[in-house]
Length: 112
Length: 111
Image 1: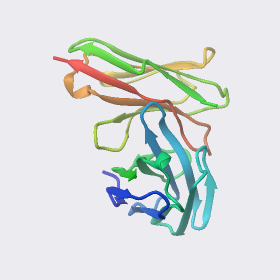
Image 2: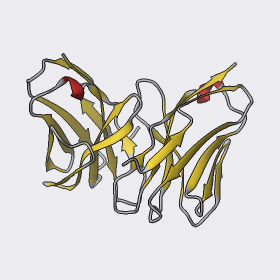
Image 3: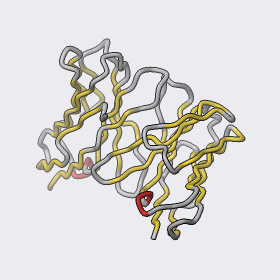
Image 4: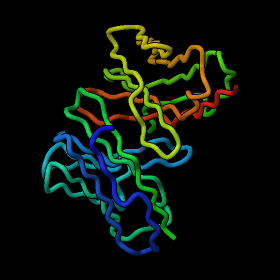
């Protein structure tokens, strides 16, 4: 497995609370991504990073923010969690934009 | 707007049969077409990928067929096995951009 660790693996949180998910990589890959996976929707891109402090929005970025202060860490924050953000969140990394994407094991987030 | 459309949503195949999953894309500039396999509780993993300069790529029992003029590509799994039961995602992208995924196909191979 590629050196990607997502934490936590499972979380239950209440509506309106802030939540931060962490993706840690040991591969020194430049590109990092956050996707959410929902039944009937496949994998949808939330945000991605193309370097330290360089991030951009994906197709479903509303309600989410990200930060990347170090090459190895990419944080996804839900500022005020809503039930619609209940999902499985996957982090992915790529060495460059012409190579394979490796995915983490996922974080199952439930907002009640 | 969904950039990659995948069908069928689910598929049941008998052991030894051929599984076929189809994808269509909109952007003619796309130049990388991977397929990912996902087992329950795991993240997706690259299965096989193709670029538009070839019409077919084969790796073991897995083959991608690519039709540039029709903007379609498909995954064929020959001699399907129960261990192939998983969710399969096609994706497409232009080099330099993030992957656009289809909605996935849940494959069940029965003994």
